[in-house]
Image (tube, rainbow, N blue to C red; front, side, top):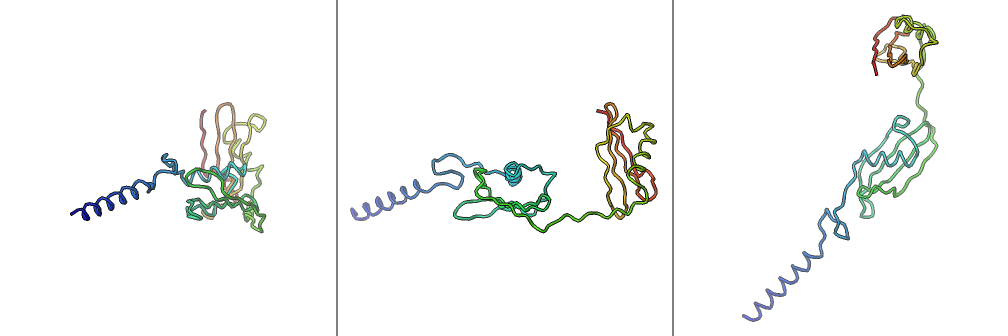
Length: 182
């Protein structure tokens, strides 16, 4: 009976110590709760470190993996012809590793097959808005191909209004227009 009691006591003590020493998955070594950052937050950290904004990059890869017992996000993106590689700790947001390489990567230019010029497209939009070029500030004049239709996207401001136009680059037809009052 005494041997059984000692055996049970030893097993119970062993189980107790094992349970006490094992950290739960949501705690750190100092028993504080670990806060995992999102993949979007990791992208923002990489962009801030690279001193770039999201509109200036193209993301190629953003995934979580485990290396050396550390969960991390592997983030890759291009800006112009430079490839950026980041490894971000998924719990702390710390930049573990990064590099950038100049590549032979170029964003292909869209060939301009327009029959009307940018100036002609701007004049069509201004005439429709009953405004002259000396009264407006152009924000955007871009040639674009959308669903096999080549067009000009034109945005300009007058007073507290923003005018947006899509002009068919072949015919000069106004495909759409909008005026937003601010």
